[in-house]
Length: 372
Image: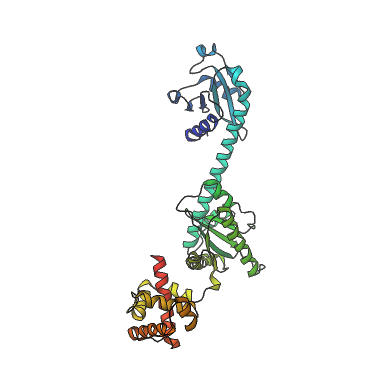
């Protein structure tokens, strides 16, 4: 069915190559788009004849008096999948516009085909996103869920490793063609699924059968990350969970989200298997994090020179000499600042247990600052 919105797009496309008046009519002979807005909605008898005969119809000036709603020009049937879906009409001297007629018809049919297949890809993308959401929420798989998986060609018997990529596109939405190129990644295997996830994320469900080695899956995910950055010419952050059975997809998804939080700070790709202390941070409530920071560095966290000193001490792996050099201060000044930290907090940087508390507090503070 040729709808008005698509017909108007056809008019706009053809108008780039031809300045004559143009109409698009549906299979009932009704004009649904035109360069002359006054003709929209009117009956075009020539278009109806063109539809019935499935061939080009030349309309002369004499025909204008005997056929309803027509003007001199050429009417061409538009075909899609072997069926006549409408008519495009070009107003003017038939001798003058005939050389362009077939090109215009082919251009129109190509535009309709591209529009149709783009809509199919959009539909599939939305269907996959909806299925993925239900998959993450489902506590059990009912027959309807399994049927949807079958229609979408998703094998529910294959282990999955979730990767979530997030683009930094300055809040601009990616256009359809770019999404389609992402979703058509050539290296995707038969059990890999690419799912559009919102406006700036894409999920890769990598098939992880027992025959595949972990390093091979890592390499594939890394190549996908590289592909995205090259395609978008922008920084892409990606978090990847562990390969898990399909019924545990939500767990792999949560792991990927946790890894993505870290990846966004570093602008790279992070695998959940590589996380250590970050796992503990992720499980802490915001209230617990806030209380821990207050109890450790709360007494001096607003004193910039002390905070900068402590942060640099950790960056320099507790080397007092390197810390003093990096801060461009005398070693005695560094000792004075560390003593002041101890006096205010009761925690000593020379004590391993206290040092660990201070390190965790600084990490939590940094994390909270980045998330605000």
